[in-house]
Image (cartoon, rainbow, N blue to C red):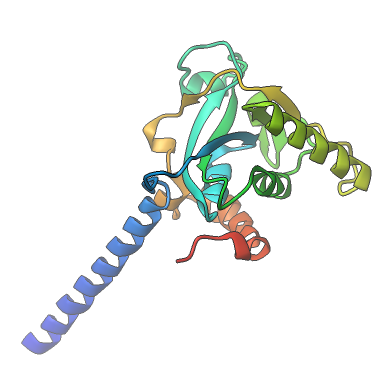
Length: 216
């Protein structure tokens, strides 16, 4: 009996240890330190629920941090509840800090276009409202020109059956979302929205962009 009990305790300990390492790895995915001498850049995208957007971009090689937040509106430091009331003018956004020597803005744009439907106005799937609109807030003229170029090119290609409604606007503001929204998918994979909405999207994303993912 003692031997069996010891085996059970050891197995439970190993499982807990493995789970702890997995959780730490997922947490580290969004808290990578930036090496000395590395010059980073920032991209700000809105493509529906920021839980999804964050999960996609966190997994790309060359991305150091993804922060969920609100922007584009007029209310200072809005709460999630205020944004959901649809009166603040804010959009759910992801602020992406990346190393342009490892991943270019063009590549980030490719991920942006392919991970949501840019033809539905203020809607992504069952998520409906102005806070879910498709938008790129450019940081400089180069980002603006690239975003406009690819939008026009994709529209002409007929990649989607309907016109692209993605807004391309100058950066106005960004307010970090509440702490419980940060690193959301990695910390809440058992939650129903994560299991039934984000997980299937993430599975497709990892197949399409397998060559751009961080090494596990």
